[in-house]
Length: 247
Image 1 (cartoon, rainbow, N blue to C red):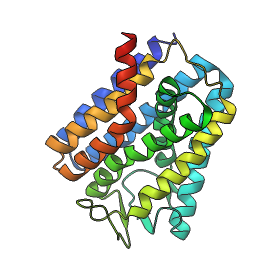
Image 2 (image 1 turned 135 degrees about the vertical axis):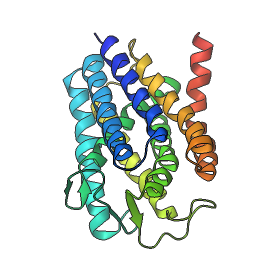
Image 3 (image 1 turned 30 degrees about the vertical axis):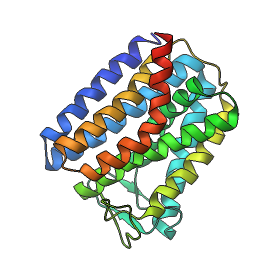
Image 4 (image 1 turned 120 degrees about the vertical axis):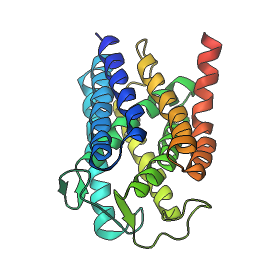
C-alpha cells in the first residue's frame, strides 16, 4: 500500500499537469486547483504511510499551517515576499489567501526534503539543500501563475532579467521561509532513508523536467524555463547522480 497509493496519485497528478497547457480560462484554473489537491494528498499520504502519523502531522503543521501564516502576513504587510494580492480564481480565501496556496507548500516541501535526505549528510546540509530546491521551484511557479492572473505584485522591482512582474524579494522570502520550514521538518522527522521513497523522487524529478519543458515549449515563458532550469536543476542534479550510481 505504501507504494501503490502514492504511485496512483502521482499518475493522476501527471495527467492533470499534461492537460493544463491544453486548456484555458476556468478549466485551467480548475486544473490548477486539482493538481494542488492531488499533490498535497500524495505527499501527506506518503509521509503517513512511510514514516507514520508524526511525520504527516509535522508536514501539515510546518508547511500547511506555517505556509498559510506566512502568506497571510505577506498579503497584510508585504513581508517577506513583497506587496501582492490574489485574484479570486483559485477558490475561497481566508485573510486574503486562497486556501489552496498553503497546500502547495505542503505538496512540494515533502519531495524536496526527501531528495535532500537522499543526497546529503548532516542536518544543516539537508536543510539548506531542501530549502534551496523548494525556493527554486518558485522560479517556475510564480511566473506561470502571474501570467495566468492568479496573483499580482504591486511594486515588482527589482526583478530578475526576463521575469518582469515579480520582485526579487519574493524569491528571497521563499528561501527564508523554506529554511524555517525545513528546520521544523528536520526537528520532527527521522532523517533516515526510506525504502519506499521512489514515488517522491519521481515527483521531484517530474516536477523539474516537466516544468522546464512546459515553460520553454507550451507556456511561452522562456525566461522562467532558463532561471528555473538552472537554479532548481542545481538542487535536482545531485539526486539524479545519486540514483544513477545506485542503479
